[in-house]
Image (tube, rainbow, N blue to C red; front, side, top):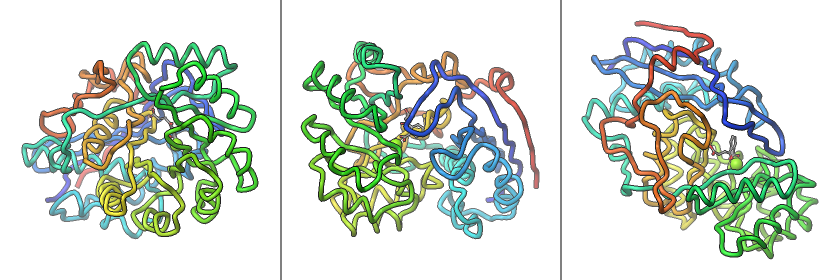
Length: 369
Ligand code: OSB
Ligand code: MG
């Protein structure tokens, strides 16, 4: 199959509240929204890039340039037999996985639609509902944090992740754990610590956390293997796992107990599925991370999270946790059991609100064959 037309949009869609981690603060989504036409079918996707290269090396401007100058021309040249052919077609472009994912996701939606199947079913999903939680950014003080967590729990979320950093780690985690002794609780450091901080990180061990996510450098595997021997809390990698090879290296080196899968970080759904499968074969649980996606990326994440080895709740909250108004007409709502329902319609199932998308579009670009 040949692609006929690709339309890219940079958007800005404000969050309900700024999102603050150990390394950055963002006020809204700077995602690139992708629309592709092929074989008379229209499909949509999203590259959930941010304003700054503080999570990984990319930002919304680098992804925009790489898509226009390299990836879209390569896609228009390619003859695709299925969505698995997209990543190989981009092979000459090193890295830039977020730029790649926006196009790759859209082609999965397109092929699923062509097959008349839901994306979840097309990917091999087995669940009708996926368990989810909330990732809580760094707050100004502990009373504020307790109030924010309490509000999410009263909305029905049953798992909370706390962003941590030096000076905001043991005490806030202790405060949340003391207030809710049975809560499913985990923490995420976004690469701010060093191996020399191992004894400090071990102070989190008494809090019965599900996991600690990415304490050390964004591109490290070796030191995480060292650190893991010094912690009782299960160690989870996010930033470090950018490909199936990285997952294999981390598993072989015993650098993690658990893997966070974000298909955007990995450059697409095909490689994300490979990581899911190899982790399952190795007995390593995975869970679905998030990049504060719009409703389009969120629907894609929900579809992937319906695969069988996603065994912990995902960072895939309902749309209203992120945006007052989203660019889709059918946002997810939280079920009382802290799950989201996997869409059963054709493709990923997100219905784009094109009029509102126009309102939040900052820049638009089109290429045709
Ligand atoms: O490290 O998991 C992360 C958001 C942006 C970039 C990195 C991360 C996050 C989150 C939010 O934790 C997860 C979500 O709710 O989308
Ligand atoms: Mg993370």
